[in-house]
Every structure is written in structure tokens, then in C-alpha cells.
Length: 71
Image 1 (spheres, rainbow, N blue to C red):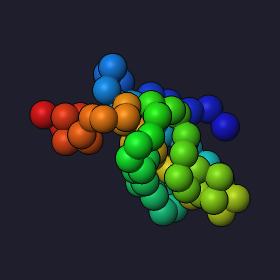
Image 2: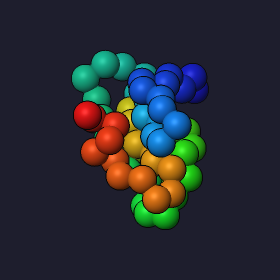
Image 3: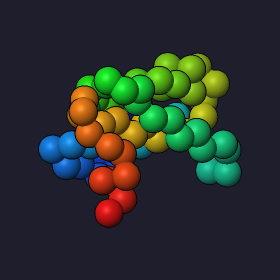
Image 4: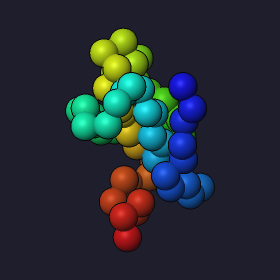
């Protein structure tokens, strides 16, 4: 599995984990809990991998707000 960084900033990291073997499967998007760390994988990543679902994980640095990623 090769991960792809979709967006990165000191306060957040958005990472794509392409688990699906074919296009058209489900895409699951999950968010890190607060407080959390700016990591490539987290809540749901392992579960999505077991089910072969593409996964986007949105992580933020502790003490920050996710909406800053979309400003």
C-alpha cells in the first residue's frame, strides 16, 4: 500500500490510503480525535485496510481546529 499526502500544513495532515483493488469501491473519510497527533494514519485506517476500502485520514495537531485545513 502506498499512501499519498493530499494536503499538509504544520497544523494538519490529510492522507489517502488506497486499499481498493479496483475503482468504484467505497471511500471512507475519518478524522483524528482531539487531542490527537499529526499522523498519516489513525481511526479507521486498519479497519478500512482489512475491508479493502479506500480511506482518507484527516489528522490535526493537538490544540488546533480542523476547519483551518479548509480555509
